[in-house]
Amino acid sequence: DTEVTQTPKHLVMGMTNKKSLKCEQHMGHRAMYWYKQKAKKPPELMFVYSYEKLSINESVPSRFSPECPNSSLLNLHLHALQPEDSALYLCASSQELAVAGTQYFGPGTRLLVL
Amino acid sequence: AQSVTQPDIHITVSEGASLELRCNYSYGATPYLFWYVQSPGQGLQLLLKYFSGDTLFQCIKGFEAEFKRSQSSFNLRKPSVHWSDAAEYFCAVALNYGGSQGNLIFGKGTKLSVKP
Image 1 (cartoon, rainbow over the protein chains, first blue to last red):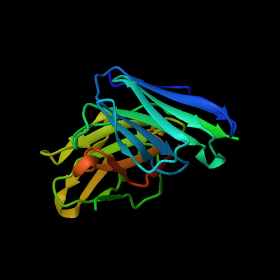
Image 2 (cartoon, each protein chain N blue to C red; image 1 turned 180 degrees about the vertical axis):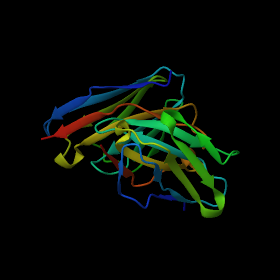
Image 3 (cartoon, rainbow over the protein chains, first blue to last red; image 1 turned 90 degrees about the vertical axis):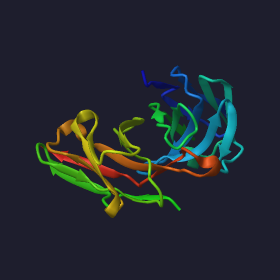
Image 4 (cartoon, rainbow over the protein chains, first blue to last red; image 1 turned 60 degrees about the vertical axis):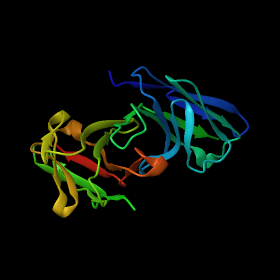
């Protein structure tokens, strides 16, 4: 089973709202990732967690706050977003944070900020 | 720096015709290469990966890829395209240094359209 699940599938929020995106995997993977993908563009890496510790933050604004409560879960907390933050947010996981680690992606959450 | 180039932004082929999607990489050592496919509004599905060894191999959905070190290419091919193959295809290389090990660098993608 190589499934990564993400909820919700769609989210509409105002600029003053607080919401969270959730990602889950039960493959025993120890590395998890958040990507942002704008239309007609490749995914851009936002955060990497390895063994539940933040490993990489690609200079993402503080209105995006990741959290890794346990090895299977990865959340992305959203607060005071801007309309330009509207995008598809993808979660991925891999066995380890290693060059040979294959990343498996979830279906994504499509976010619209009004 | 490692990079991936997909020269074709959009390709249209007729159903049943053959397909080749091009990918060129820039990397000094043995690259770790991937092809992902993304249907509209969906996440990325792994098609195949190359770590080392064979230069020609098959993966899911009848696609095959050929690694040519001399040309720094990792092209994706399919002998006969089906309408359901219409999607965006991304080539990616995994970084292999420092704290960024395993991070993927994606090409800009090639959109495949299939004519009936």
